[in-house]
Image 1 (spheres, one colour):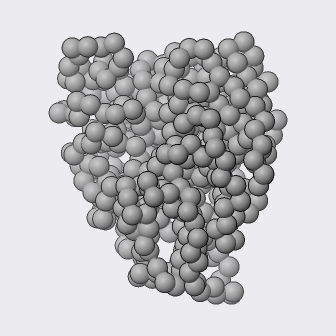
Image 2 (cartoon, helix red, strand yellow):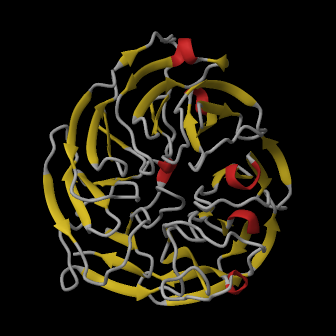
Length: 415
């Protein structure tokens, strides 16, 4: 581990802004603030095909996006018609995209079909054509389908507008989810145009565009500063970049992960934590700077990372499981010391969920592991189903229950 000098202005103590939501609301990728954390209690510890499954619903298509929860409704995206198992000879022209609404009892309320913009990539490895998670402001849905564009729907499934952010594709597909800042829908369109794009949520018109989104598959993160200010931070190859979320104006940049970057950023008390890359790096940077802040605001760097999975923060520590080397990490926020690095049995692509003192680690094919959320490695449970689904979507919590999305089904887990 290498440490770097940084400046601390005592009079300007940074705070993380996380909306206070009801237990039924999980409005975006990784929930409140994009942090992957819920304050719900009594979440289930164990389940199986015959235990603690409230309901299981077959979805109208495949996908790797997470559901979101608003009141008594769930919303999720899917794809069908192409790119599925056992569809030899299928034509990419038959691809269909779906936006789906379910009741909290698992019954599908509506299924809105979206016609893809062709030609779409004929091969998307592992994740398919429905990777980004929707976001809602409580009145409308905002959905990203890569080169097909950004969509606004009302809660009855009526499309209100469509916005274009670029036409390029990639063999890994599109994986960044939209976020909301006031009246702006923000999308990391690294694959589609190498851009970060702000769209007016009312009109669907582009209001700003910033370049430099190089080899970046992570969802932008809003970090809170003193006085209620927020900065938009995104990790790209070689750099971490910060912008004014209302205008797209560049604010600061810092040396970052020297590789493509998938894990999303998390933050605490004005410090952003970035992991990623095949070199396994974790970096802490104090937000609020100007220009190149590599020497002034980079706090520490640790030899720990992941290719795909994002971390969570709990009581002074970062936690995650690396999909690259199948290692569970606990890293101290204060100085980047690796508290533990334990060999993990299976490979996750989903990011962890922190809740009720537990870490829920959903693996691709090996089930869900539950770890104790403390700086001492302890496995509390291992739960799995027998349907042979692949789980790439990050789990969510709503109404005291867990929602797990596989490539075929949506599960509701509760006691």
